[in-house]
Length: 247
Image (cartoon, rainbow, N blue to C red):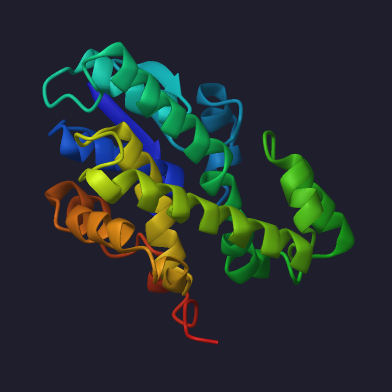
């Protein structure tokens, strides 16, 4: 019934896997290999023209965009609800979802690619680099800016500022509640992959002075859905062992 086309280390894939596991939904875990560029093949692009993961197939029908997939799953499978019941609560959750998508989800890509993924472009010829860039349907501009050597120090500093703003807002919101919207919701699971990637890249000091956020993070890591989502091979340090080492 449910098939998730995803990649183990993709943060957007991880937030959908978190949702599926938290709701106790059985699904076929179809893994897309980035190194083989399986997300850019004609067969995959026929499902998802953006050439990104994840994609959800529900009875063969495609549902695209990770946050859209999360909300879709919660609407279609209402047991174990992860959306507030009242309109104001839903509005608060969706405000968090938009913020997470626009700020930390975008920001974490910069250090992720600088520390990890840009290495696969370093040895390409100019023609091969251009071909690789042009193959990216949705993220062509992102890859062109990254180039062969990664993003600028200015862009990296900006990403750190946005990540710091995220944990600051989270800490303030969590001062009088266990979860971002009171009860556990999609908003919590949406931001988890960014926090986990920050830790994986050696950046946990960003929340050193955020006690409420630290409490939230400790509680999240005890959940079975978290442990099921982060199996061996789901973190960049599982593959690139030198990543995340203290500078």
